[in-house]
Image (cartoon, rainbow, N blue to C red):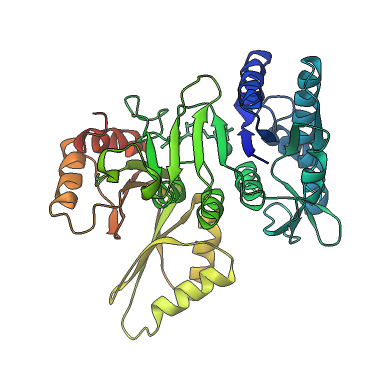
Amino acid sequence: MRILVQKFGGTSLSSPQAREHVLSHIKRELALSYNLVVVVSAMGRKGDPYATDTLLDWAVQNGDSLPDREKDLLLCCGEIISAATLCSLLQNEGISSTVLTGAQAGFVTDDHFGSARILDVRPTRIIEEFKTHKVVIVTGFQGQSESGDFTTLGRGGSDTSATALGAVLHAEMVDIYTDVNGVLTADPRIVEDAKPLAYVSYAEICNMAYQGAKVIHPRAVEIAMQAQIPVRIRSTFSESEGTLVTHPEGFQDVQSGILDRYVTGIAYVSNVTQITVDCEDGMSNLQLKVFKSMAENSISVDFINVTPKGAVYTVFDHDSERAITALQDMGFKPSSLSGCAKVSVIGGGINGVPGIMARIVEALSEHHIQILQSADSNTTIWVLVKKEDMVQSMRALHTKFQLHR
Ligand code: ADP
Ligand code: MG
């Protein structure tokens, strides 16, 4: 059985015109004799009737006291409505399909409502349904706990549903359909001349996704990478094949099989606060105490620089008050700068290439942008800037590394 997984994101399903495009992608692959697993997200974005954010707002409007378990139940409605809509459209075209919820499709998760982890995927029911249907529609983002409760997988969860199904069903490919032409060198909403990349390795896209490029969820890429299933990220609104994500050896039609670029793209995470804690005389174990207290308060920390004189790190803006209070309670006198953004230059080839940091500093200083902090690894260089400098930083770095070419 040749199985193809197609995942359609929120904007791909949000209007009758968009759904026409979805139908054409389904029909094209059916004509190639694939058995299709079609994973759907909730329709539209914030403000649209059945979008995930709209359902979340609904819970808030009702007093914001809905328990997490019941909130997941509410959120599951978005994907169910999408799936039923698509099933009707296929039926109208004479294409027989059936809808399975996350639970029916075999997703077993833990019971961390709102961000459940997948424990197992048992796709027996999907295989069974292929005896009578060529298309099995699966509601993305959902699972079921071992005690039988509906759970959701967290933001970007439908991407994870799609690659997990691709992995257990040994699909030929997982196609992630969205509103952009694949993975670009930067978010096209920020950098207008960002260029689509024909190929990226699992490692490159995973890294970009972890640094904020939300075109695909990093968990979804990790699962595809482990199972060695190729993924294509492509636009619902065009016939272009978008970006192929696989191992570098899979880049067959790249001349010589080598794709040697040192910078792949630029990504950002905004709304972070920089916290500085100085070590005063006689203070011992400052760093240990600081990071232990962040962990005890479940505050995730990032961009950590530790020196004998203290520690500087970032937390999300929404955690900053709690972080500062925890530090003050321990007798520290932290200072903080909220409204920062972390901009990342990502590429497998930057390791050891002389002068990259110099070019970053040059690009930013040409625009009088202050670097608040920086760090680097084998594959990424990060700079922290003020939020109001984020767009200009992204554009300046994109141009400096000639990513528009
Ligand atoms: P979907 O609802 O289809 O899952 P998302 O909004 O989650 O769509 O992801 C698509 C969006 O990701 C694009 O509209 C784009 O603004 C954003 N994006 C961020 N970084 C990148 C990038 N490097 N390449 C492509 N898109 C990106
Ligand atoms: Mg998405």
